[in-house]
Amino acid sequence: MNINKLSYYGLFVMLLAVTLSYACSKETPTNMADAAATIKSDSANHTQTTDENAFTPIVMSVLAPPVPVLGSDGKYHLSYELFLTNASTFDWQVVSIEVLDGAAVDTVLDTVSGEQVTNDMQQVGTRQPVNMLDPTQSGLVFITFSVDAENIPDSLVHRLTITGTDGLPPFVSSFLQLPKDQKTLSELGARFDVLKQDVVVLGAPFKGKGWVAVNGCCDSYTHMRSALTLNGQIFISQRYAIDWMQIDEENRLYVGNPQDLNNWVGYNADILAVSDARVVTVVDQFEDQIPFVLPTESGAITLEQIDGNHVILALPNGQYVFYAHLKSGSILVKEGDTVTKGQVIAKLGNTGNTSAPHLHLHIMQTASSLGSNGLPHVFEEYKLTGLTTDESFFDKGLEDNTPFVDEDTDTIVGNSIDILPAATSGIHTEDLPLNLNIVEFQ
Figure 1: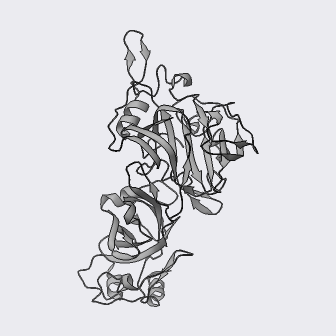
Figure 2: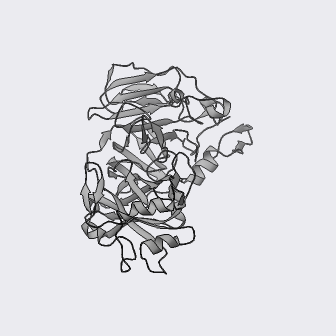
Figure 3: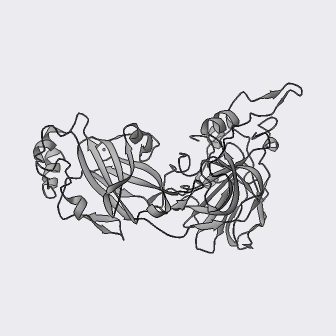
């Protein structure tokens, strides 16, 4: 929700164990035998079996199967997390992960390899980029790719290729009877059915021009990599969250001293109910904060304070919408109320774990803002007017410590961000504005 850019008994025992599941030959350099042809799915628990056994030192699973969502680029986006655990006594380096069509494993839909492995994988419990897993260590690989409508797969499976720190450990090569020149092992795993369910359609969360979809789907790290361990599970409730910020006609986020909240373009904007809904949670007890100062920089923050002032609405489809960082004293609804689409429910503020005024909006499976699975959404209608870049928005428009000063008035007016043309500009219906798209809501 912070809108900042980046706001492992021994070898003998292990070999005894894998003897029971080993199946490989000198003629099977990939260590997968015919697993690709014989892999079977158990869609209830996302496991798989093969007619032949194979040594799989890395255990693969997914946190949650993806729901394809239509983006503003006209393609369907699939985003999810591959969970890897080193269940062996060796250090393993991830060479590549291939995402395969579960119905046609020769069809590669996405590949993570080389430096991208380090870029897209982090050690569980940290945000530390890694491509190595020590014994007992686990990692999360953040996978996102897009396809045309006719190419949305029914299921996915993954081919993981690994190596040791200096090639394959000699004892592993000997035990598995591998060719002396073989440097890697490959395994298939983490097969699951793609969830082709309806995506909730939302009305506008506010009105007006210049709304920037910050930290949005699907190449931003801030939300999509916010893994939290809550209630005995790992959740990414913010998987499809957007931090909505507004710019003025001159493409500026603020005009005047940025430490004054009233100088921010979007501050105090009316926040609207995105659907007919029932109010299930209202918190309005936190004061608005000085921009650029996170609560963790000025003192401790608790789990209850992260969201700041917020509202959670129960949607008719059984899902929930979460509005965070609302202005102090501005919430106009109470728990148990029913609201209609377009009704003003609060104003945009700067409370909780935030460094500048914005509306954090996301959809989730349950009424828990953090301990729930984040789900995609689309908007009923909006106008796409352009887009910007990470460098321009964050480094220039938001975080530049030397903003433009008007020579005549000696007033800090903020830097204008760069606006680029969008290939699919114009009126959009029932799709999701992608990261750093700039839109107008009627």
